[in-house]
Amino acid sequence: MKKAKRITALLISCAMLLALLAGCSGTKSRGEDNNDNNTQAEEGYPFTLDNYGRQVEITKRPQKVLTLGPNCTELFAALGLSDLVVGRSLVNHSRGPLPEYADAVNAIPELNHASATREAIISSGADFIYALDWEISEDGCNIEEVGQYGMTVYVNSAATVEQMYQEMLDIGKIFGVEDRAEALVADQKARITAVQEKIKDQTPVNVLVYDSGNDGVFTCSGINFESLIISLAGGKNIFDDIDSKQWVTVTYEEALARKPDVILIHDYDSPGVDEKLAEIKANPTLAKLDCVKNERFATITLESVLPGDRIAYAVETLAKAFYPDVFE
Image 1: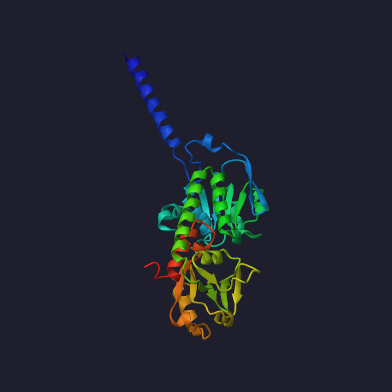
Image 2: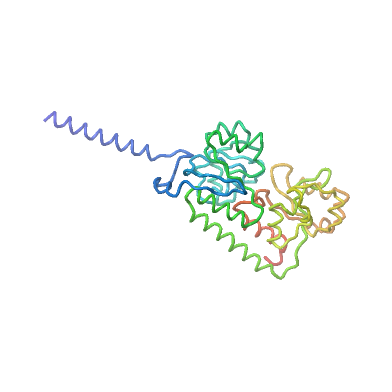
């Protein structure tokens, strides 16, 4: 009888231990594969994608991701992939994620507050990097070097809306969430179409982008993604004829001569919007502009005009600033 009780107690103890182990095995840390069906997630690999002329081979679903750029980070949140992100950079160029993604993005550790460093990238243990093209450099994310550490790099460098849509679809394919990516693209297209339908009879607004000022106005050129966003929102970048590089410094006299209707001010870490407004109003040349006299200013966070998940959001925001009467 006593022997039977001991056997029963032993069996109960074993059962409890197995249950505990099962519970522990179900707890996943950041960067582990959170797909409920890992076998299903591996179907369709390997494959190769074209990333702006560079062939990227994907042999399996990545497990630990670095997102170098706030736009890159938020796209992963929008696709429900933030749990795989083990580090993010360029937080200093962000005013924070959109409210619907705040919890997911804020839970991701900072790899670097500013640009990602070579040391931080190499020691991260990541196997995949989604990097804004600003972050590709010899001292930071060197594609060839990080490849030697088993890291695959996909560069965020869209110059057109269609290219950004393709990036969304590519990330969706890489991580096995094609349906989510397709839904995100469809939502972006529908929202942009709705804005353009509303402003179709409006006269284009001439826009001066003011990122910062010192020896002149640091602004975006015609080949900058922001110039495209402005156009979709019914505006015209007054320096869209410059195509030598994405960001340029123009003289205050050049800005005055092109007579902008609105000055679009970038909002990010430092200097802040209030400081930039004070600079503009105190500048003797810019102060001559009618838009300054009439205080026709608009603001937008820098990450909102980078290629990413905020295309529609940026178009909606700018269209409302350009045509306030239409959106009353």
